[in-house]
Amino acid sequence: MDKISVTLTTNYKEKPAGPDIPFGVFTTDHMFLMNYDREQGWHDPRIVPYAPFQMDPACMVLHYAQEIFEGMKAYRDEEGRIRLFRPEENFKRMNDSCERMSIPKIDVDFCVEAVKQLVTLEKDWVPTAPNTSLYIRPFIFATDIHVGVHASHTYQFAVILSPVGPYYATGLAPVSIMIEEDDVRAVRGGTGFTKCGGNYAASLRAGEKAEEKGFSQVLWLDGVERKYIEEVGSMNVLFKIGGKIVTPALNGSILPGITRKSCLQLLRDKGYEVEERRLSVDELIGAARDGSLEEAFGSGTAAVVSPIGSLYYKGETFVISGGGIGPVAQDLYDTLTGIQWGRVADPYGWSQVIC
Ligand SMILES: *Cc1c(COP(=O)(O)O)cnc(C)c1O
Image (cartoon, rainbow, N blue to C red; front, side, top):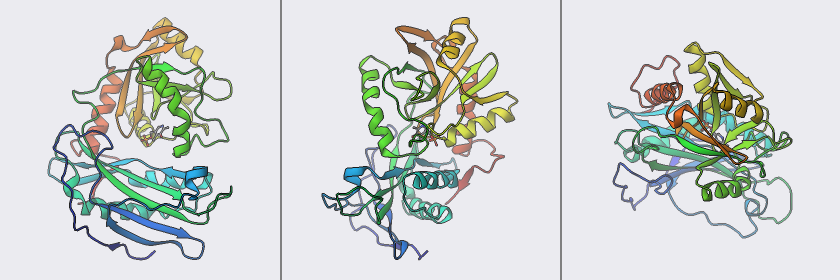
């Protein structure tokens, strides 16, 4: 791959005053781009001033949604250095998404290097207040100008950056979750394991319905039998049942979260018995009824860990951990955020200082 060219902006933006920066509203001064065509492969890697894309109305992504994305963060540690958390994992997963969506694969190491260069250039945008970060959004979309169904022959790859405030303004807070019985997010053989925009488009209606009823997100059941637990909104889900950690196995319709994977490693190393398996909603509700469901929490890059205080299913509300924060969720949150912000020792090499 060519060297990354850099064109600096002449029009620097004002940075948001922290610490309560709303999620996904502000973008930085520059972005990373590269393009794909059949002759040159991925080419013309460049850092350029942040600017709108020009798009032909027949641009394929607008019609057939051939689009994937990733989500990761840059963290400022107490010494003022900037850190990334397991960035290779994001680009390996992006390649899995590429493969399913007939998008040409990217070079993992090159993309990690591109993110490092972009974040280093924009390091003043990584906010300084505790638990703030710079959200990193890589994405790829189809750019052929053709209203006809086939895999595009040309693609745009981009990385944009967005400073974000703390997910929890006042420390970890439990959420209330509705188990969705009608809409489904994904089926095996479909695109559930990829981070594609289409999965989210199909999930919006259930999310809106849950919000109207006062719940913060939905818990998805499997798309075939509506019987097995899958994941929560944009998070994976973990439970503590009878002393063991139970989480749905990665079966093709669940997104393989990097936070999930990190939580499971930490839990195993802390001595917990961890089961990745099918978990039916009946088993879960049974455990809630007989008191063996000790904790439930979501895991994802945005919130890190999100304790579930109550589950709503078929007209009944089940309170978990007394509606508070369970000790496992709190411990995982403290350990993971400690590693991410460089506050605690990282025996895994997950946190990488980049500048
Ligand atoms: C991104 C995402 C997750 C969480 O993945 P992380 O790598 O932990 O951020 C879980 N579920 C869905 C549907 C997602 O898109």
